[in-house]
Amino acid sequence: MEYVEIARSESDRGELVLRERRDENAPTAIELRANGLFVMDTLEVSTERALASAALGLVEAPRAVVVGGLGLGFTMHEVLADHRVEKCAVVEIEQALVDWMRAGTVPHGPALLADERVTVVVADIAVALAEAPRASYDLILLDVDNGPDNLVHDTNAVLYEELFLETARRVLRPGGVLAVWSANPAHELEHTMATVFGNAEAIGHDVLLQDRDERFWLYVARVTSET
Image (cartoon, rainbow, N blue to C red; front, top):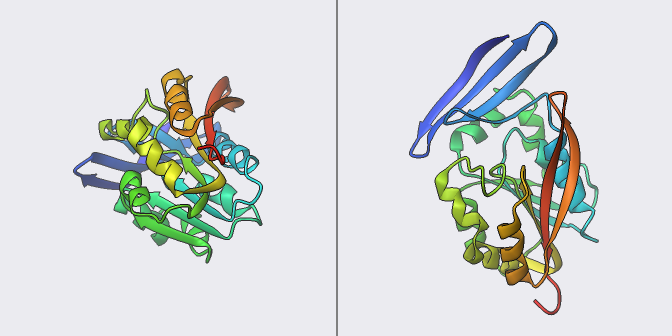
């Protein structure tokens, strides 16, 4: 197997690398890594799509959606495939990743970002939601880590705590849903979401990841008239 670096960026959060993975026994894939940690690639995208499709299925009218984390765009792609979605705000903290998508360094990037329903905000998701108007979104998809016990950046820990979850609840409309992706069971997160929203549910998803059977989790909470 051969790895060819396509792009690299340094920021206060560390190193972001885009590289091409070449294997004579498998299709060529683009791989994203942050501080040496594998984030995602263009070959195995079932988890990103499952996050979006499962969450969209929980909302009757997901007209306005927030995606926390651009990644390589596959969660956003699944959101935009839903004809009910009228607005999709993608919040990504790494300017370089947005630039790579826009410039075509990630080949499918320009077409995705050209969708008139998409707005890309380069910011910390915690800051972006704190500045959002009350009751302005129907669905928030949080996919910036592999869950609270597998952080891309240590500072992301606040995204699974009560203060941020309260902010998310504030910007959701009645019936709106917060969905958080986790590679492992996250019982503490589920408890905290239930404390803030008055309800929470863990939904397991079986996926085939690089020829391995894996079970990932979607933690969801809904804004009801009582919360």
